[in-house]
Image (cartoon, rainbow, N blue to C red; front, side, top):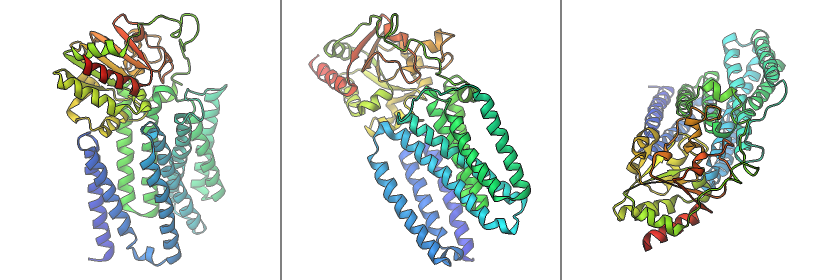
Length: 466
């Protein structure tokens, strides 16, 4: 066989590795091995790409590529190792955006090289798709990063004539793309790329609150599609397969998350969810001024120690406090006393898909103690205590009981079905969706105010003394 045939064979094996990696990532138990398999397959495929005679023939380009890879690794490896779990969504967003931007730049560079020879229409179409989708992914991910990093408000941003402006930008992009397709004109392609960047910004600005996890998943899918397009542009089968897998899996995950929120994808993207905030707290009749039942760690420790079943419901506050290890210590202590304990995981808990699963896996929580929402809810009515750690919107009964609420219709973990509800919160501020939680004022609810990690440590001590 020729060298190119051997390389294609390695690409095929790498593609199989990617598919098996995705299969592993579908389960918390096998996610780590799946991630390692995918990384190994990508490393082998990249290594064999340098074996192409066309690549080795251009020494300067080869050196520049290796230097660029070294710089990228020097930035990415420390960033990935040092990032806090609370900042993981931001890292995913910005890395995803870089991938989309790279795909768009590749398409532009190839077009610049081929433009003098008047490329075929299908080649221009490949380039246009990569430029459009990659640019939207890049700028959209940048805005998502800014929202998550709180460099700008996380709430939806709307402005007068927003829909009309969006329509004008969309129609102009279509016109420029058609013009580029017909003429092969470079300035028209550049104008398409610039307006696509604008489209990414105005596409993400109206999205906020609890919809950010869905947005991240969708933008990840966009990047995959852009990479697939660049694969066609470069005639590289591996990029086509890898990009298609990322794009397809991202779309499926986006649909699953939208379903978990009880809303259509169109509603998530275009309803400016969260722009109308009710009872933000602090005024007459708001959360800050309404009475609640506060408890002490000693009282709650006794309650937990003599319970039969305790359900731990983690949320973003657990990640902020880095309290996953202390939560596991408490769970282990309770199980030693014969208490049945499990973790109820909402599909959109945290600020990205699987955030809570990753967080608890970091603390080596056994996989069989994690139950997804549909599995956990039937058991909530038999629980003596629902221990809510930093969650808010995902246990808010307004999703079931208040038709006018922005989260109405979103499936939640039914913490209100438990005999007792214990909330660990820093303050009475509303959750990421910006609305108050009536569960805080339920007669069955007791609040423990303070940092989740410190409060859990006090609960551990109280259970030991009980």
